[in-house]
Picture 1 (tube, rainbow, N blue to C red):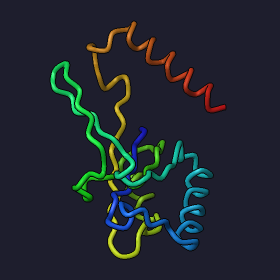
Picture 2: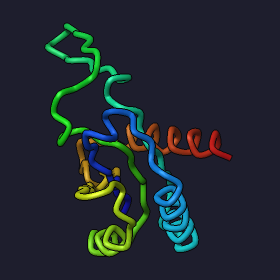
Picture 3: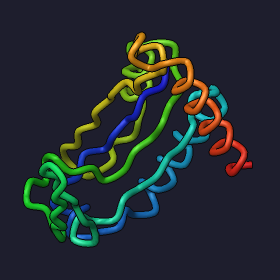
Length: 142
């Protein structure tokens, strides 16, 4: 199963405060462990929401909203994409993660939908297109 593991933002990450050498080194070691275990698919930090945009959809209308976004507790400061056997395994990895920020931090784990999760609504043609897309994206990474 694939999952996205999201580091929730805080006031410092939203203010653009960069992590210190110690946490960067700890996170680097943790990412190395994930990679060696065959779990890590991607890992990235995100710029503050002040540099972000949102697009609100209402029928055919699109409205652009410039950051910053006010609900810090709903924002993401960074993420991993992991391949694990179960949600329990993902939880065990998160428990081993260095605390991303001084003080309190929160990390959320969400399972990624796989083609089979969509059932018969995802037609064979759609599945084939999805598989082709994944192969093309995978080829670009190499």
